[in-house]
Image (cartoon, rainbow, N blue to C red; front, side, top):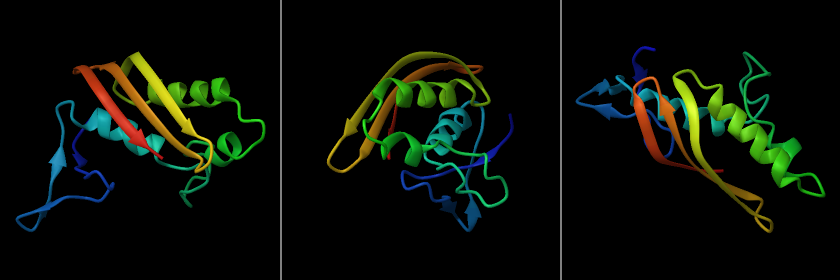
Length: 119
């Protein structure tokens, strides 16, 4: 793992004193998890296999909560630096099709508590 550009709550890079801020020493792992969970499948034109298949998971009827949670958990576990998923909770808002994930996980740097992703 190396330095990553720091991202704010809107996933925008943070500029400080004319320089892009970076994160490392463990702070990059939750940021990588967050970025991976916020990337839609086929969103990145350089590799259409990157991302979570949200359209295929959330826009189907009937909605399958177990399948959706399984994909999201797997995405977290497969993130570089994550060793173990400790807690996972998800909420799906049927009318808006909004999805919230709260997770805690063990990383190569230690435990990360209460990461929340709203999608």
